[in-house]
Length: 554
Ligand code: VG1
Ligand code: CO
Figure (tube, rainbow, N blue to C red):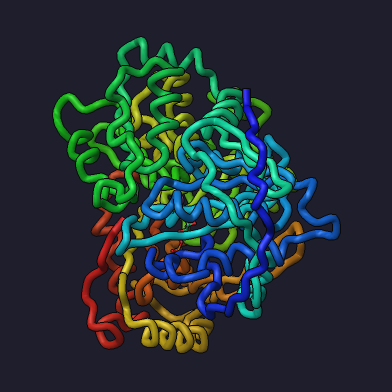
Protein backbone atom coordinates (compact mmCIF):
# COMPACT_ATOMS: atom_id res chain seq x y z
CA UNK A 1 0.00 0.00 0.00
CA UNK A 2 1.29 3.44 -0.85
CA UNK A 3 0.78 6.10 1.80
CA UNK A 4 0.81 9.75 0.92
CA UNK A 5 1.91 12.48 3.23
CA UNK A 6 0.53 15.92 2.52
CA UNK A 7 2.57 18.55 0.77
CA UNK A 8 4.51 21.12 2.67
CA UNK A 9 2.83 24.47 2.61
CA UNK A 10 5.83 26.45 1.37
CA UNK A 11 6.24 24.40 -1.83
CA UNK A 12 5.86 26.60 -4.80
CA UNK A 13 6.91 26.52 -8.40
CA UNK A 14 9.87 28.76 -9.08
CA UNK A 15 11.08 30.05 -12.41
CA UNK A 16 14.86 30.23 -12.39
CA UNK A 17 16.85 32.16 -15.00
CA UNK A 18 19.55 30.20 -16.81
CA UNK A 19 21.86 30.33 -19.81
CA UNK A 20 22.41 27.69 -22.46
CA UNK A 21 25.34 25.29 -22.37
CA UNK A 22 26.48 24.63 -25.91
CA UNK A 23 27.45 20.96 -25.51
CA UNK A 24 24.15 19.24 -24.76
CA UNK A 25 23.78 17.34 -28.01
CA UNK A 26 22.58 13.76 -27.39
CA UNK A 27 24.69 11.03 -29.06
CA UNK A 28 24.03 7.39 -29.95
CA UNK A 29 22.41 6.87 -26.57
CA UNK A 30 21.51 10.09 -24.76
CA UNK A 31 23.76 12.78 -23.34
CA UNK A 32 26.98 11.30 -21.98
CA UNK A 33 29.77 13.33 -20.36
CA UNK A 34 32.20 13.38 -17.50
CA UNK A 35 30.36 13.48 -14.16
CA UNK A 36 31.92 16.86 -13.38
CA UNK A 37 30.31 18.30 -16.48
CA UNK A 38 26.91 17.21 -15.20
CA UNK A 39 27.72 18.66 -11.78
CA UNK A 40 28.12 22.18 -13.18
CA UNK A 41 25.49 24.62 -11.92
CA UNK A 42 22.15 24.18 -13.73
CA UNK A 43 23.58 21.68 -16.23
CA UNK A 44 21.09 18.93 -15.47
CA UNK A 45 18.34 21.48 -14.94
CA UNK A 46 18.89 22.92 -18.42
CA UNK A 47 18.91 19.54 -20.14
CA UNK A 48 15.88 18.16 -18.34
CA UNK A 49 13.85 21.35 -18.80
CA UNK A 50 14.78 21.18 -22.50
CA UNK A 51 13.42 17.64 -22.67
CA UNK A 52 10.13 18.81 -21.19
CA UNK A 53 9.99 21.91 -23.42
CA UNK A 54 10.38 19.76 -26.50
CA UNK A 55 7.89 17.00 -25.61
CA UNK A 56 5.11 19.13 -24.12
CA UNK A 57 1.86 18.46 -25.98
CA UNK A 58 -1.22 20.68 -26.09
CA UNK A 59 -2.77 19.35 -22.89
CA UNK A 60 0.38 19.84 -20.80
CA UNK A 61 1.58 17.14 -18.42
CA UNK A 62 -1.20 17.00 -15.83
CA UNK A 63 -2.54 13.67 -17.14
CA UNK A 64 0.88 12.26 -17.89
CA UNK A 65 3.19 9.90 -16.03
CA UNK A 66 6.98 10.25 -16.04
CA UNK A 67 9.32 7.48 -14.86
CA UNK A 68 12.79 8.15 -13.40
CA UNK A 69 15.61 5.79 -12.43
CA UNK A 70 19.25 4.98 -13.00
CA UNK A 71 22.00 2.40 -12.83
CA UNK A 72 23.13 3.45 -9.35
CA UNK A 73 26.34 5.15 -10.36
CA UNK A 74 27.91 8.07 -8.51
CA UNK A 75 25.61 11.18 -8.60
CA UNK A 76 22.54 9.06 -9.44
CA UNK A 77 20.62 9.93 -6.30
CA UNK A 78 21.40 13.66 -6.38
CA UNK A 79 20.43 13.86 -10.05
CA UNK A 80 17.12 12.11 -9.33
CA UNK A 81 16.19 14.61 -6.61
CA UNK A 82 16.88 17.50 -9.00
CA UNK A 83 14.86 15.88 -11.80
CA UNK A 84 11.88 15.05 -9.57
CA UNK A 85 11.62 18.74 -8.61
CA UNK A 86 11.78 19.91 -12.21
CA UNK A 87 9.23 17.31 -13.29
CA UNK A 88 6.86 18.31 -10.49
CA UNK A 89 7.26 21.99 -11.32
CA UNK A 90 6.43 21.20 -14.94
CA UNK A 91 3.18 19.67 -13.74
CA UNK A 92 3.42 15.91 -14.39
CA UNK A 93 0.38 14.18 -12.92
CA UNK A 94 2.40 11.23 -11.70
CA UNK A 95 6.12 10.67 -11.22
CA UNK A 96 7.39 7.11 -10.67
CA UNK A 97 10.86 6.63 -9.25
CA UNK A 98 12.63 3.27 -8.91
CA UNK A 99 13.33 2.37 -5.29
CA UNK A 100 16.94 3.17 -4.39
CA UNK A 101 16.96 5.36 -7.50
CA UNK A 102 17.42 2.14 -9.48
CA UNK A 103 15.97 0.96 -12.77
CA UNK A 104 17.75 -1.00 -15.44
CA UNK A 105 17.32 0.28 -19.00
CA UNK A 106 15.07 -2.65 -20.04
CA UNK A 107 13.11 -2.34 -16.78
CA UNK A 108 12.52 1.33 -17.54
CA UNK A 109 11.17 0.31 -20.91
CA UNK A 110 8.85 -2.25 -19.28
CA UNK A 111 7.69 0.27 -16.67
CA UNK A 112 6.85 2.94 -19.26
CA UNK A 113 4.85 0.44 -21.30
CA UNK A 114 2.95 -1.19 -18.46
CA UNK A 115 2.10 2.07 -16.65
CA UNK A 116 1.23 4.00 -19.81
CA UNK A 117 3.84 6.61 -19.02
CA UNK A 118 4.57 9.43 -21.42
CA UNK A 119 8.27 8.75 -21.05
CA UNK A 120 11.18 8.09 -18.75
CA UNK A 121 14.46 9.65 -17.76
CA UNK A 122 17.34 7.23 -17.21
CA UNK A 123 20.52 8.20 -15.42
CA UNK A 124 23.33 6.11 -16.82
CA UNK A 125 26.47 6.14 -18.92
CA UNK A 126 25.92 2.44 -19.56
CA UNK A 127 29.19 0.48 -19.70
CA UNK A 128 31.36 3.55 -19.08
CA UNK A 129 32.97 3.68 -15.62
CA UNK A 130 31.36 5.71 -12.81
CA UNK A 131 32.66 8.06 -10.13
CA UNK A 132 33.53 11.74 -9.63
CA UNK A 133 36.21 11.58 -12.34
CA UNK A 134 34.38 9.17 -14.60
CA UNK A 135 31.17 9.27 -16.62
CA UNK A 136 27.51 10.12 -16.20
CA UNK A 137 24.63 10.30 -18.63
CA UNK A 138 20.96 11.05 -19.20
CA UNK A 139 18.74 9.20 -21.68
CA UNK A 140 15.15 10.04 -22.50
CA UNK A 141 12.73 7.27 -23.52
CA UNK A 142 9.41 7.91 -25.21
CA UNK A 143 5.90 6.46 -24.92
CA UNK A 144 6.67 3.16 -26.62
CA UNK A 145 9.38 2.58 -24.00
CA UNK A 146 12.23 3.03 -26.48
CA UNK A 147 15.00 5.59 -26.77
CA UNK A 148 13.91 8.95 -28.15
CA UNK A 149 14.16 8.88 -31.95
CA UNK A 150 16.36 11.36 -33.75
CA UNK A 151 13.53 13.82 -34.41
CA UNK A 152 13.01 14.11 -30.65
CA UNK A 153 16.70 14.28 -29.68
CA UNK A 154 17.31 17.03 -32.22
CA UNK A 155 14.36 19.00 -30.81
CA UNK A 156 15.83 18.56 -27.33
CA UNK A 157 19.20 19.80 -28.56
CA UNK A 158 17.56 22.83 -30.20
CA UNK A 159 15.83 23.61 -26.92
CA UNK A 160 19.11 23.42 -24.96
CA UNK A 161 20.56 26.03 -27.33
CA UNK A 162 18.01 28.67 -26.48
CA UNK A 163 16.89 27.87 -22.97
CA UNK A 164 16.49 30.93 -20.73
CA UNK A 165 14.69 29.52 -17.68
CA UNK A 166 13.78 26.31 -15.92
CA UNK A 167 11.03 25.46 -13.47
CA UNK A 168 11.62 23.85 -10.11
CA UNK A 169 9.96 23.56 -6.77
CA UNK A 170 11.36 24.17 -3.32
CA UNK A 171 10.92 21.03 -1.28
CA UNK A 172 12.57 18.42 0.89
CA UNK A 173 14.15 15.40 -0.84
CA UNK A 174 11.80 12.53 -1.57
CA UNK A 175 12.36 9.20 0.19
CA UNK A 176 14.10 7.02 -2.39
CA UNK A 177 14.52 3.98 -0.20
CA UNK A 178 11.00 3.00 0.78
CA UNK A 179 8.07 2.28 -1.48
CA UNK A 180 6.10 5.36 -0.59
CA UNK A 181 4.21 8.24 -2.05
CA UNK A 182 4.22 11.96 -1.61
CA UNK A 183 2.66 14.98 -3.24
CA UNK A 184 4.95 17.60 -4.70
CA UNK A 185 3.16 20.64 -6.09
CA UNK A 186 0.42 19.03 -8.15
CA UNK A 187 2.35 15.82 -8.79
CA UNK A 188 1.90 12.47 -7.12
CA UNK A 189 5.42 11.10 -6.61
CA UNK A 190 5.70 7.34 -6.00
CA UNK A 191 8.78 5.34 -5.16
CA UNK A 192 8.12 1.97 -6.84
CA UNK A 193 9.60 -1.53 -6.89
CA UNK A 194 12.10 -1.57 -9.78
CA UNK A 195 11.71 -5.35 -10.24
CA UNK A 196 7.96 -5.73 -10.49
CA UNK A 197 6.96 -4.62 -14.00
CA UNK A 198 10.06 -6.06 -15.65
CA UNK A 199 9.62 -9.44 -13.98
CA UNK A 200 5.98 -9.61 -15.08
CA UNK A 201 6.95 -8.98 -18.70
CA UNK A 202 9.73 -11.56 -18.62
CA UNK A 203 7.61 -14.20 -16.93
CA UNK A 204 5.13 -14.16 -19.79
CA UNK A 205 7.83 -15.01 -22.34
CA UNK A 206 9.78 -17.90 -20.89
CA UNK A 207 8.97 -21.37 -19.61
CA UNK A 208 10.15 -20.84 -16.03
CA UNK A 209 9.27 -24.45 -15.15
CA UNK A 210 11.61 -25.82 -17.81
CA UNK A 211 14.45 -23.51 -16.76
CA UNK A 212 13.91 -24.42 -13.10
CA UNK A 213 14.11 -28.09 -14.06
CA UNK A 214 17.35 -27.39 -15.94
CA UNK A 215 18.91 -25.93 -12.78
CA UNK A 216 17.56 -28.84 -10.74
CA UNK A 217 19.30 -31.25 -13.07
CA UNK A 218 22.63 -29.70 -12.01
CA UNK A 219 23.10 -27.20 -14.83
CA UNK A 220 25.29 -24.34 -13.62
CA UNK A 221 25.09 -20.66 -14.58
CA UNK A 222 27.57 -18.01 -13.47
CA UNK A 223 26.25 -14.49 -13.92
CA UNK A 224 28.49 -11.44 -13.49
CA UNK A 225 26.49 -8.27 -12.78
CA UNK A 226 29.70 -6.21 -12.77
CA UNK A 227 28.33 -4.21 -9.80
CA UNK A 228 25.80 -2.59 -12.10
CA UNK A 229 22.05 -2.46 -11.68
CA UNK A 230 21.34 -5.95 -13.11
CA UNK A 231 22.50 -7.58 -9.88
CA UNK A 232 19.15 -6.94 -8.18
CA UNK A 233 17.23 -8.36 -11.15
CA UNK A 234 19.51 -11.35 -11.61
CA UNK A 235 19.38 -12.39 -7.95
CA UNK A 236 15.61 -12.14 -7.98
CA UNK A 237 15.05 -13.96 -11.26
CA UNK A 238 17.83 -16.59 -11.28
CA UNK A 239 18.24 -17.33 -7.58
CA UNK A 240 14.78 -16.62 -6.14
CA UNK A 241 12.40 -17.41 -9.00
CA UNK A 242 14.33 -20.04 -10.96
CA UNK A 243 16.02 -21.82 -8.07
CA UNK A 244 19.62 -21.38 -9.20
CA UNK A 245 21.88 -21.82 -6.17
CA UNK A 246 23.04 -18.75 -4.18
CA UNK A 247 26.34 -17.57 -5.60
CA UNK A 248 25.09 -17.93 -9.18
CA UNK A 249 25.20 -14.11 -9.34
CA UNK A 250 28.59 -12.56 -8.69
CA UNK A 251 29.37 -8.87 -8.22
CA UNK A 252 25.63 -8.54 -7.67
CA UNK A 253 25.50 -5.44 -5.49
CA UNK A 254 25.19 -2.15 -7.39
CA UNK A 255 28.11 0.14 -6.48
CA UNK A 256 28.58 3.83 -7.27
CA UNK A 257 31.94 3.17 -8.92
CA UNK A 258 31.24 -0.41 -10.12
CA UNK A 259 34.09 -1.52 -7.86
CA UNK A 260 36.50 0.71 -9.79
CA UNK A 261 36.10 -1.20 -13.08
CA UNK A 262 34.35 -0.65 -16.38
CA UNK A 263 30.94 -2.36 -16.19
CA UNK A 264 31.45 -3.48 -19.77
CA UNK A 265 30.60 -7.12 -20.51
CA UNK A 266 33.40 -8.14 -22.83
CA UNK A 267 36.34 -10.50 -22.44
CA UNK A 268 38.63 -7.68 -21.32
CA UNK A 269 36.50 -6.20 -18.56
CA UNK A 270 34.82 -9.40 -17.39
CA UNK A 271 38.21 -11.13 -17.19
CA UNK A 272 37.48 -13.04 -13.98
CA UNK A 273 34.34 -14.57 -15.46
CA UNK A 274 36.28 -15.52 -18.58
CA UNK A 275 38.97 -17.12 -16.42
CA UNK A 276 36.45 -19.22 -14.49
CA UNK A 277 34.72 -20.24 -17.70
CA UNK A 278 37.98 -21.51 -19.16
CA UNK A 279 39.19 -23.36 -16.05
CA UNK A 280 38.52 -27.03 -15.31
CA UNK A 281 35.09 -27.59 -13.78
CA UNK A 282 33.68 -24.46 -15.42
CA UNK A 283 29.91 -23.82 -15.21
CA UNK A 284 27.76 -24.61 -18.25
CA UNK A 285 26.84 -21.03 -19.07
CA UNK A 286 28.63 -17.79 -18.21
CA UNK A 287 27.07 -14.38 -18.74
CA UNK A 288 27.63 -10.74 -17.85
CA UNK A 289 25.67 -7.50 -18.22
CA UNK A 290 26.73 -3.86 -18.38
CA UNK A 291 26.03 -1.11 -15.83
CA UNK A 292 22.48 -0.36 -16.97
CA UNK A 293 21.61 -3.96 -17.86
CA UNK A 294 20.98 -3.68 -21.58
CA UNK A 295 24.15 -5.40 -22.87
CA UNK A 296 25.14 -9.03 -22.44
CA UNK A 297 28.03 -11.38 -23.04
CA UNK A 298 27.39 -15.11 -23.44
CA UNK A 299 30.09 -17.72 -22.73
CA UNK A 300 30.10 -21.48 -22.84
CA UNK A 301 32.81 -23.68 -21.33
CA UNK A 302 35.97 -22.30 -22.85
CA UNK A 303 33.88 -20.74 -25.57
CA UNK A 304 33.07 -17.12 -26.44
CA UNK A 305 29.86 -16.50 -28.37
CA UNK A 306 30.12 -13.41 -30.56
CA UNK A 307 27.09 -11.12 -30.23
CA UNK A 308 26.30 -11.68 -33.92
CA UNK A 309 26.27 -15.46 -33.43
CA UNK A 310 24.23 -15.12 -30.24
CA UNK A 311 21.60 -13.14 -32.13
CA UNK A 312 21.57 -15.67 -34.96
CA UNK A 313 21.29 -18.70 -32.64
CA UNK A 314 18.48 -17.08 -30.66
CA UNK A 315 16.63 -16.19 -33.88
CA UNK A 316 17.12 -19.74 -35.14
CA UNK A 317 15.66 -21.45 -32.05
CA UNK A 318 13.28 -18.93 -30.45
CA UNK A 319 10.17 -20.08 -32.28
CA UNK A 320 10.59 -23.68 -31.16
CA UNK A 321 12.16 -23.26 -27.73
CA UNK A 322 10.68 -20.11 -26.15
CA UNK A 323 6.92 -19.93 -25.54
CA UNK A 324 6.74 -16.15 -26.08
CA UNK A 325 7.82 -16.64 -29.70
CA UNK A 326 5.87 -19.79 -30.51
CA UNK A 327 3.92 -17.95 -33.20
CA UNK A 328 7.21 -17.40 -35.04
CA UNK A 329 9.22 -14.26 -35.67
CA UNK A 330 7.68 -11.47 -37.73
CA UNK A 331 11.13 -10.35 -38.83
CA UNK A 332 14.58 -9.68 -37.45
CA UNK A 333 16.87 -6.66 -37.49
CA UNK A 334 20.49 -5.85 -36.85
CA UNK A 335 22.61 -2.72 -36.84
CA UNK A 336 24.71 -2.23 -39.96
CA UNK A 337 28.11 -3.17 -38.41
CA UNK A 338 26.67 -6.35 -36.83
CA UNK A 339 27.63 -9.58 -38.57
CA UNK A 340 25.33 -10.96 -41.24
CA UNK A 341 24.83 -14.29 -39.42
CA UNK A 342 21.22 -13.43 -38.57
CA UNK A 343 20.51 -12.54 -42.22
CA UNK A 344 21.10 -16.17 -43.17
CA UNK A 345 18.72 -17.40 -40.46
CA UNK A 346 16.08 -14.94 -41.67
CA UNK A 347 16.44 -16.25 -45.21
CA UNK A 348 15.94 -19.81 -44.01
CA UNK A 349 12.91 -18.81 -41.91
CA UNK A 350 11.52 -16.85 -44.83
CA UNK A 351 11.28 -13.59 -42.90
CA UNK A 352 12.65 -10.08 -43.47
CA UNK A 353 15.96 -8.92 -42.02
CA UNK A 354 16.30 -5.16 -41.57
CA UNK A 355 19.63 -3.35 -41.45
CA UNK A 356 19.58 -0.20 -39.30
CA UNK A 357 22.16 2.35 -38.16
CA UNK A 358 23.96 1.83 -34.84
CA UNK A 359 21.81 2.56 -31.77
CA UNK A 360 18.68 0.89 -30.44
CA UNK A 361 16.40 3.81 -31.30
CA UNK A 362 16.07 2.59 -34.89
CA UNK A 363 14.51 -0.76 -33.94
CA UNK A 364 11.50 0.77 -32.17
CA UNK A 365 9.61 1.82 -35.30
CA UNK A 366 10.04 -1.64 -36.85
CA UNK A 367 8.74 -3.31 -33.70
CA UNK A 368 5.81 -0.94 -33.27
CA UNK A 369 4.87 -1.68 -36.88
CA UNK A 370 5.03 -5.44 -36.26
CA UNK A 371 7.93 -5.87 -38.69
CA UNK A 372 10.53 -7.16 -36.27
CA UNK A 373 10.48 -9.51 -33.28
CA UNK A 374 14.15 -10.11 -32.42
CA UNK A 375 17.06 -7.76 -33.04
CA UNK A 376 20.61 -7.06 -31.99
CA UNK A 377 23.87 -5.20 -32.29
CA UNK A 378 27.48 -6.33 -32.37
CA UNK A 379 28.12 -4.27 -29.21
CA UNK A 380 26.71 -7.03 -26.98
CA UNK A 381 23.10 -5.90 -27.38
CA UNK A 382 20.26 -8.34 -28.03
CA UNK A 383 16.54 -8.00 -27.48
CA UNK A 384 13.01 -8.49 -28.69
CA UNK A 385 9.70 -6.72 -28.95
CA UNK A 386 8.81 -7.49 -25.29
CA UNK A 387 10.26 -4.04 -24.53
CA UNK A 388 11.83 -1.35 -26.73
CA UNK A 389 15.38 -1.56 -25.38
CA UNK A 390 18.09 -4.13 -25.62
CA UNK A 391 17.86 -6.45 -22.67
CA UNK A 392 20.84 -8.29 -21.21
CA UNK A 393 18.92 -10.61 -18.89
CA UNK A 394 16.48 -11.46 -21.66
CA UNK A 395 19.41 -12.72 -23.73
CA UNK A 396 20.63 -14.91 -20.86
CA UNK A 397 17.10 -16.26 -20.35
CA UNK A 398 16.78 -16.90 -24.08
CA UNK A 399 19.95 -19.02 -23.97
CA UNK A 400 18.70 -20.81 -20.84
CA UNK A 401 15.36 -21.49 -22.56
CA UNK A 402 17.06 -22.87 -25.65
CA UNK A 403 19.51 -24.97 -23.64
CA UNK A 404 16.64 -26.30 -21.50
CA UNK A 405 14.68 -27.33 -24.59
CA UNK A 406 17.62 -28.68 -26.58
CA UNK A 407 19.56 -30.21 -23.65
CA UNK A 408 22.66 -29.26 -25.55
CA UNK A 409 25.78 -27.26 -24.62
CA UNK A 410 26.64 -23.72 -25.69
CA UNK A 411 29.57 -24.71 -27.96
CA UNK A 412 27.52 -27.51 -29.48
CA UNK A 413 24.63 -25.18 -30.35
CA UNK A 414 26.94 -22.64 -31.97
CA UNK A 415 28.92 -25.28 -33.88
CA UNK A 416 25.72 -26.83 -35.20
CA UNK A 417 24.66 -23.36 -36.28
CA UNK A 418 27.94 -22.92 -38.20
CA UNK A 419 27.45 -26.28 -39.85
CA UNK A 420 24.00 -25.36 -41.02
CA UNK A 421 24.58 -21.72 -41.97
CA UNK A 422 28.33 -21.17 -42.25
CA UNK A 423 30.18 -18.77 -40.01
CA UNK A 424 30.74 -15.02 -39.91
CA UNK A 425 34.23 -14.55 -38.48
CA UNK A 426 33.86 -11.19 -36.77
CA UNK A 427 35.84 -8.73 -34.69
CA UNK A 428 35.57 -5.11 -33.67
CA UNK A 429 38.70 -3.01 -33.14
CA UNK A 430 38.37 0.24 -31.20
CA UNK A 431 40.92 3.01 -31.44
CA UNK A 432 40.18 5.17 -28.42
CA UNK A 433 41.14 8.68 -27.47
CA UNK A 434 42.10 9.85 -30.95
CA UNK A 435 42.57 13.52 -31.67
CA UNK A 436 39.06 14.78 -32.42
CA UNK A 437 40.05 17.15 -35.19
CA UNK A 438 42.18 14.59 -36.99
CA UNK A 439 39.40 12.03 -36.68
CA UNK A 440 36.79 14.37 -38.14
CA UNK A 441 39.13 15.29 -40.95
CA UNK A 442 39.65 11.61 -41.75
CA UNK A 443 35.90 11.08 -41.92
CA UNK A 444 35.43 14.11 -44.18
CA UNK A 445 38.14 12.97 -46.56
CA UNK A 446 36.91 9.40 -46.74
CA UNK A 447 33.40 10.58 -47.36
CA UNK A 448 34.64 12.17 -50.54
CA UNK A 449 36.59 9.16 -51.76
CA UNK A 450 34.80 6.06 -50.49
CA UNK A 451 32.52 5.64 -53.51
CA UNK A 452 35.56 5.34 -55.78
CA UNK A 453 36.63 2.09 -54.11
CA UNK A 454 33.97 0.07 -55.91
CA UNK A 455 35.54 -2.15 -58.53
CA UNK A 456 39.06 -1.78 -57.12
CA UNK A 457 40.96 -4.59 -55.47
CA UNK A 458 41.26 -4.80 -51.68
CA UNK A 459 42.50 -7.65 -49.46
CA UNK A 460 42.90 -9.84 -52.57
CA UNK A 461 39.27 -9.40 -53.57
CA UNK A 462 37.22 -6.97 -55.60
CA UNK A 463 35.20 -4.30 -53.83
CA UNK A 464 31.58 -4.91 -54.74
CA UNK A 465 30.25 -1.87 -53.00
CA UNK A 466 31.56 1.00 -50.86
CA UNK A 467 29.48 3.77 -49.32
CA UNK A 468 28.58 5.87 -46.32
CA UNK A 469 25.57 4.01 -44.95
CA UNK A 470 22.25 5.79 -45.19
CA UNK A 471 19.09 4.44 -43.59
CA UNK A 472 15.65 4.98 -44.95
CA UNK A 473 13.17 4.16 -42.18
CA UNK A 474 10.45 2.06 -43.86
CA UNK A 475 7.90 3.07 -41.22
CA UNK A 476 8.12 6.85 -40.90
CA UNK A 477 10.08 7.58 -44.07
CA UNK A 478 12.83 9.46 -42.20
CA UNK A 479 16.35 9.35 -43.56
CA UNK A 480 19.46 9.02 -41.39
CA UNK A 481 22.57 9.71 -43.44
CA UNK A 482 26.30 9.38 -42.66
CA UNK A 483 25.95 6.32 -40.45
CA UNK A 484 29.33 4.74 -41.17
CA UNK A 485 31.53 3.59 -44.04
CA UNK A 486 31.13 0.11 -45.37
CA UNK A 487 33.30 -1.66 -47.86
CA UNK A 488 31.74 -4.90 -49.08
CA UNK A 489 33.92 -7.35 -50.97
CA UNK A 490 32.83 -9.77 -53.66
CA UNK A 491 32.84 -12.75 -51.26
CA UNK A 492 30.57 -10.94 -48.77
CA UNK A 493 33.45 -9.94 -46.45
CA UNK A 494 33.03 -6.47 -44.96
CA UNK A 495 35.08 -3.69 -43.45
CA UNK A 496 32.99 -1.12 -41.58
CA UNK A 497 34.29 2.04 -39.94
CA UNK A 498 32.55 4.74 -37.90
CA UNK A 499 33.15 7.15 -35.07
CA UNK A 500 31.58 6.34 -31.72
CA UNK A 501 28.72 8.54 -30.55
CA UNK A 502 28.95 7.64 -26.87
CA UNK A 503 32.52 8.51 -25.88
CA UNK A 504 33.41 11.31 -23.50
CA UNK A 505 37.06 11.92 -24.38
CA UNK A 506 38.55 12.66 -27.83
CA UNK A 507 37.25 10.45 -30.63
CA UNK A 508 36.88 6.69 -30.81
CA UNK A 509 37.13 4.98 -34.19
CA UNK A 510 35.42 1.63 -34.41
CA UNK A 511 36.50 -0.76 -37.16
CA UNK A 512 34.45 -3.88 -37.77
CA UNK A 513 35.68 -6.90 -39.73
CA UNK A 514 33.61 -9.73 -41.05
CA UNK A 515 34.49 -12.65 -43.28
CA UNK A 516 32.07 -15.39 -44.20
CA UNK A 517 33.16 -19.01 -44.65
CA UNK A 518 31.15 -22.19 -44.97
CA UNK A 519 33.28 -23.98 -42.35
CA UNK A 520 33.52 -22.92 -38.71
CA UNK A 521 36.95 -24.01 -37.55
CA UNK A 522 39.52 -21.66 -39.10
CA UNK A 523 41.68 -19.56 -36.75
CA UNK A 524 39.96 -16.16 -36.61
CA UNK A 525 43.19 -14.14 -36.82
CA UNK A 526 44.15 -15.76 -40.11
CA UNK A 527 40.68 -15.20 -41.46
CA UNK A 528 40.58 -11.50 -40.63
CA UNK A 529 44.22 -10.49 -41.12
CA UNK A 530 43.89 -9.37 -44.78
CA UNK A 531 40.89 -7.21 -43.91
CA UNK A 532 42.63 -5.68 -40.89
CA UNK A 533 45.71 -4.81 -42.94
CA UNK A 534 43.59 -3.30 -45.69
CA UNK A 535 41.69 -1.16 -43.20
CA UNK A 536 44.89 0.13 -41.65
CA UNK A 537 45.86 1.51 -45.07
CA UNK A 538 42.41 2.72 -45.94
CA UNK A 539 42.03 4.72 -42.72
CA UNK A 540 45.75 5.64 -42.60
CA UNK A 541 45.91 4.95 -38.89
CA UNK A 542 49.67 5.21 -38.66
CA UNK A 543 50.10 8.52 -40.47
CA UNK A 544 47.02 10.21 -39.11
CA UNK A 545 47.12 9.03 -35.48
CA UNK A 546 50.43 7.24 -35.05
CA UNK A 547 48.56 4.12 -33.99
CA UNK A 548 49.58 0.66 -35.00
CA UNK A 549 47.22 -1.34 -32.78
CA UNK A 550 43.69 -0.91 -31.42
CA UNK A 551 42.97 -0.05 -27.77
CA UNK A 552 40.40 -2.83 -27.43
CA UNK A 553 39.41 -5.82 -29.53
CA UNK A 554 35.98 -7.35 -28.94
C1 VG1 B 1 27.74 2.13 -28.71
C2 VG1 B 1 27.48 0.86 -29.49
C3 VG1 B 1 26.04 0.82 -29.97
C4 VG1 B 1 25.11 0.95 -28.76
C5 VG1 B 1 25.45 2.21 -27.99
C6 VG1 B 1 24.63 2.36 -26.74
O1 VG1 B 1 27.55 3.25 -29.53
O2 VG1 B 1 28.36 0.77 -30.57
O3 VG1 B 1 25.82 -0.38 -30.66
O4 VG1 B 1 23.77 1.00 -29.17
O5 VG1 B 1 26.83 2.19 -27.61
O6 VG1 B 1 24.73 1.23 -25.91
P1 VG1 B 1 28.78 4.03 -30.23
O7 VG1 B 1 28.16 5.21 -30.94
O8 VG1 B 1 29.73 4.41 -29.14
O9 VG1 B 1 29.40 3.04 -31.16
V1 VG1 B 1 24.67 1.45 -24.24
O10 VG1 B 1 24.55 -0.09 -23.52
O11 VG1 B 1 26.09 2.30 -24.04
O12 VG1 B 1 23.32 2.39 -23.98
CO1 CO C 1 24.09 -0.17 -21.62
